[in-house]
Amino acid sequence: MIDLSTKKILVTGAHGFLGSHLVKNLVELRGVAQSQLTLPNFKELDLRIWENCQKAVQGQDIVIHLAANVGGIGLNQEKPGELFYDNALMGIQLMEAAQKAGVEKFVILGTICAYPKNTPTPFQEENLWNGYPEETNAPYGLAKKMLLVQAQAYREQYGFNAIYLLPVNLYGPGDNFDPQSSHVIPALIRKVGEAKKQGKNFIDVWGTGMPTREFLYVEDAAEAILLATEKYNHSNPVNIGSGVEISIKDLVELICKIMDFQGEVRWDASKPDGQPQRRLDVGRAEKEFDFKASMNFEEGLKKMIKWYHENIT
Image 1 (cartoon, rainbow, N blue to C red):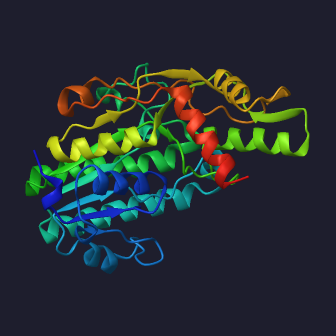
Image 2 (image 1 turned 180 degrees about the vertical axis):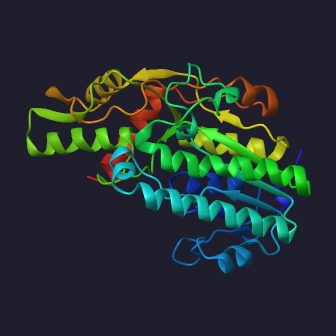
C-alpha cells in the first residue's frame, strides 16, 4: 500500500468539480502537505502542448489525471471533434511524459461513456469492448478509452504502473450548473430553481424519462480514486459507482419533491435520451481496494440543492 503522505503528487483538473474534493481529501484525510501537491489549472498548463506535459510531471511520484473537456448530451452533440481531440491528446501526452520521467504511478479517470450502447446491466468491465458506444457521446468515450489501451501497452512494454478507473456520473456540491455544458442532475436542479423563481408552472425536460442512470456522490468518488491509488496495481479497468439505478423520470420527480416544485414536467421526446440504461457492477472495486459508496442518494441530492441555493441562485 502506498503512503500518499510521503509522495509528491500531480493532480490535473484539481480545480474542477471532482478535483477540488479529491485535493481536500488528500490534505484533510491523507495528511498530504500542500507543498507536496502540484495543482495546475488549464490557463497555467495547457496539457494539449507536449512541453507542458513534460514540465508537469518533473519530480512527481504520482500523477492523478482528472483533467477533461467534458459536458452533457448537448455539448457532446455540438463539439464531438473538440471533445475527442482534447481528451485523447491530453491523456496520451501526459502518460508518455510520465513514463519517460519515471513517475511511480499514473491514475487515469476514464468514463462510463466508453461502454457499448447496449451493454447488459449491470455493466461489467469485461463488456467494455463488446460494441460501439452510444452515438451522442462516442467521440468523448472513445478518446478516454484509448488511455486504457495506452496504459495496458505501457505496463506490458515498460513496466509502467498505470491504472484505469471507470466512474459513473458524479453529483454533489460544487457541480457544474452551466446550462450549456452541465450533466443531467445540475441541469434539472437549475431548471426547477429557475421555474420557481420565474413563477412558471412547468419545466421542459429532454427525452422520454425512460432511461436509467446511476450516480455517485463526488466525495465518494474522491475516496474511491485515492483508495485505488493506494492499493490497486493491475492492468484491468475498474468500475467506480454506487450500484444504485434510477430512471430519469423518477429523478425528476425526486428533485421536484425536494425543491417543492408542484408544476408540470413536459417531456420533449424529439430530444435524445442517450444510453438506454446505466448501472455498474461495482464488485471489483470492493474486492480490490475495499471501496463501497456511503452517501444515500436522496441525502446527497439535498446537500447539492442546498449548495445550489447558497452559491448559484
